[in-house]
Each structure stands twice: as C-alpha cells, then as structure tokens.
Amino acid sequence: MTPIPTNPSHIIPQDDRLESVTAQVASGVSTRGDKGHSQSEEQQNAEAASENIVGRPGGADGPHVDQIASVRAEQVRKLAELREWVRDQQEIEILEDVRRRYVLGDRSAIQSITITPNGATKPKTIQSRPNLPRPGPPHTYKKKNRADYDMWERDCESHYTQVASEFETEEQKVDFGIQYVSQTLKTLWEVYCQQQALICSEWKPTWEMLKQKMLDALGTPAERRQAAYNSLKRCKQRSGQSPTDLLAYLSRLWEEVGDYNPQRHVNEFVSALSELIRNNLFLLPVNQRETVPQVEEQANAIYRRLLKSNKIGNRKFRGSKRKQGPSEPSEDQRSPKRSKRGRRGQKRSAKGESQSNSPAIAQGSIKGNGGNTRRGYGRGNGRGRIKSGDAATYHSRHRVPRIG
Image 1 (cartoon, rainbow, N blue to C red):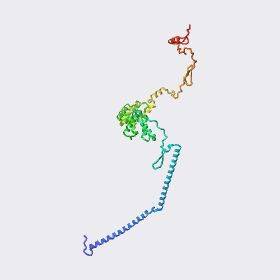
Image 2: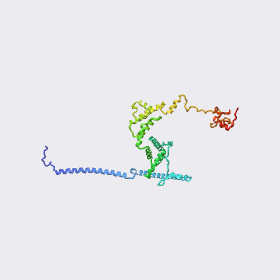
Image 3: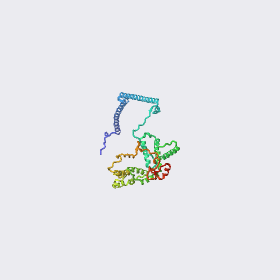
C-alpha cells in the first residue's frame, strides 16, 4: 500500500490539475483543426481546378472538339439535302412516266401509283410469286365420311399456303373452298349465310366457319363418334393398301372417337392387317411389336417382302403374270396384229371397208329380184331355188316357162 505523502508541497491542488488538462486538450484541438483546415483547402482547390477544366468548352481540348462537332453537323445537313433532292428527282421521273403512258392510251397507268396523305407519291408494289408449279385441283367433298372431309380440308389449305398471294382475305378462301363441295353442301352453305346476314348485317364468312359447317354436315359429334367406332370394328386392309396408309386411316378414326389408349391402338392395328401379314407378324418376338410404330415398321417390311414375291397386291396383275410364261414376251414387246386379208371377190377401200369386186347382178335373175338362191328350198327354173312358200308369189309376178 502506497503511503500517502504528507508533504503539502507534493500535493497538487485540484483546480490547478484541471487547468493543466484543459490547456493540453485545447492545444490538441487547435493542432487538429489546423490540419483539417489545410486538408479541406487542398480538396477545394482540386475541385475548383476540375470545375475549371470541365467548365471550359471542349474540355482540355476544347477548340479541337468544337471543330469536329461543327463539321459533323454540316455533313448531316448536307446529306439530308442531297437525299431530299434524289427523292424529288425520282418522284418527278415516276410522274412523267405515268403521264406518258396515260397519253399513249394506258388508262390504268394512274392506278399504278398511290398518293399518300402528305403528298408523296408511292408506287404500288406487286408481290413476287415463286416460279413453282401450281397444285392440282382439291378433292371434292361429298359428305361420305371423315376421310372425305379431311382430304378436302388438306388440299384447300395446301393451296392457301403455296399460292398465298391469291388468298389474302377470308372471303377469297371461302370462295375457293366452296367450289369443291357437292351441290347439296353448296345449298346448305348459302342458306346458312343468308340466315346469318339477317341476324347481323355486318357478318362475314370465314374459312373456319366453312370448315365447321362442312364437318357438321356429317352429323352431330355423337353421331360422328358412333360412325367412327363402327368403322373401326369392320376396318380391314384392302388389296394394294400399305400398312402406312391403313394406319393413317385408323388414326383419323381414333381421333374422331377420342381414344388415346396405346395398347388398344396396337390391337386394332394388328387385327386390321391382312391375314398373311398378321401371321408373319406373330412370328416375331413380342418386344418387336409392342408399340404402334414398331408394328408399322415390321408390317411394312413384311408387306414389301410379300409384294416382291408376288403373294399380295393386285389380283388381276398377278393372274396375268401367271398366264404369261417366263419365256413368252411381254405384251409391249409383241408385234402388232396383222389385219385379215379380204375375201375372194372383194377389195378394200382406202378407209379399210370391204367392197364387192364381182360384176353387177343381171336384172332378170332370181337374186336380182329378191329371190332366195339357196338350194333345197322348193322348186325353181333350174337357175336357182326358191322357198316353197314364195313360189306362188314368184310365179304370179314372173312368167317362167316350164321345161318339158
């Protein structure tokens, strides 16, 4: 424990201690204040210098940048003037050409240009068409079944895609599609249009409306579904029909029925195949005919193999092939049939008709008078025989002297 000094000279009065501490603090504050003031002055001087540089026009290189900007502005102005002059010259040439054609008698020359609201002339542009062959006429829809409708729809939409420049509006599409339906369906569509026009004067037909109306002609959705279901039950592969074509037909029926069961599709597809293809298909492993694409692939391979071996296909074609021996020439290689020679006493004219080359018949002969010259029929005068029934008539008209 530190002893407390008892000498009064070593004891610093409390007031004097406070004064010394206050003096030290004041001196420190003044020192820091001088340093902060100097730093703030340097910062202000730097900011003023930067403001002086930025504030001058063009920055550090003010005169050079101003010169570039003025040159650029002059170029833009001159370019705009030249473009305007070229545009005016082109418009003058177009209008002069139109006037020249109109004076020469081309009245449609004025229709080849369009005057815009701001007074500018705009020539009408003709859309280019690809130099491709036009598609054939579409299938005529006769309300037979869903396949008949699908063929008509597909062919019409193919025209709308390939010749798009001719079918820009819905009215053009409707006018084209209604041409390839039966007369009964045309009448049905005309009556429908008249009814809609009475309800709303601004009504206009569209291609989607026409398709829906033609589809409704097959019956209500329930009736179409039932008809498709009946077709699925009795569907069989026809002679000359490939498995791919059969699958396309079945797909339309499945879509109409609304059946999306893959296993049922496989069973119906296999049962619709011909018996010869189905028997060969059952010889394959099960894992190669589990899905519809697998069945189609294997069935096509079998179909091509049987078609090559002449076991399936057109029966008439196969029969003619069997009758024609391997060494016998084909029908195209045979020589043409020679014409028959004319009979004795006849000659052929330039047209190929037979004409008699015998002398004219005597006027008084039996043949010349319509008598029958075949032997064994009745009596005659030796120059020919006549029927017994015609003897009285003949002798009554002609006096034939009796011999002996």
